[in-house]
Image (cartoon, rainbow, N blue to C red):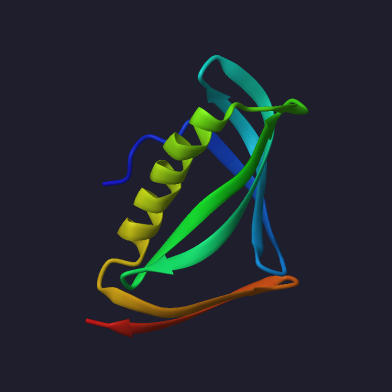
Length: 103
């Protein structure tokens, strides 16, 4: 099962090459509204994300928080797409398209 995620996602939107998440969080002593921007990519048939920025309550989080959050998001992707090899991912204005092959 997925790890406990310390945030509640309220909206997801897509811009070319990026996924943007907003919501509320309590993480590493920070709490408030968050905005996370990341770039999806493929690694060995798995969808993953590279976090580019994290702000909570308008303040940027330190870089060490990025890796932990990436690990949690990627664990969710792994669970959600179990049984599929992701062949491509394209993020455009308003949408993310995946091509996947079931095992």
